[in-house]
Length: 141
Image (cartoon, rainbow, N blue to C red; front, side):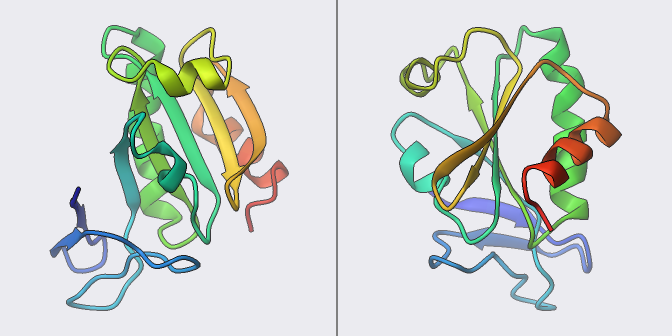
C-alpha cells in the first residue's frame, strides 16, 4: 500500500511505498523529513510499528467525539516532529484484531512503540501539551 505524504517544507506530495528499517521518509523534491502519518490495519500493524523512530498508534473510531478532537492534534505532532515520530491511526471498527491483542477497552487509546516494543499507553484525549509531555517522558528526543 502506498501512502501519499505531503511535504511541510515545499508542499510536494510524495508517494511512499516502504521505508527501509532505521530510516524515515524524505521529500523527493527538497529532501526534508516528511510527516509520517497513515492508516494502519490488522494486516499491516506488525510492520507499521517497526520504525527507526517512536511510533504512536491511535486506536479510534469515526463516531467517537474525543477521537475526532485528538486526530488533528496528532496530525500537528506528525508535522512538527517530522523525521522524529510516526503516527499510525487504526480504526477499531474496521480492524478489531490488533485492539484485542493490546486489550484496548476505550478509545481513543494511544500506544507508543519503540523498535516494535510497547513503551507507553495513554487512554483518553489530552491537550497537545500533555501529549507532547507523554511522548517526551516515554523517551522521544
